[in-house]
Amino acid sequence: MTDTVVSVRMPTSLVKELKQLAVVNHFKDLSEEIRSVVRAKCIEYTEPSYTPELQKLREDLSIQLDIKKKQAHKQQLMQDLQKVMEQLKNEK
Image (tube, rainbow, N blue to C red):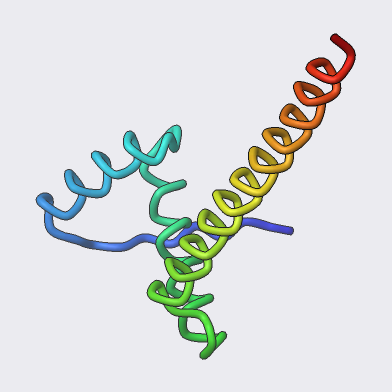
């Protein structure tokens, strides 16, 4: 893939804001932050099913599924522990 240089004029305040976002998002420079924003907007416009709200919903569902899996695993471990304790009691 070849890179093309694009020159864009924007207010100084917006540049400062984007530089701050670049630091927060762990990008090494402003160009990476701008590419990230452009990429996200392109996806948003080219894929009608993709919206920030839908992405957040997917993330929230994923978190909830992880929590449920951990709870189920913990419950199973507790049941197994109860069985072991009962077996130890019966051996006495």
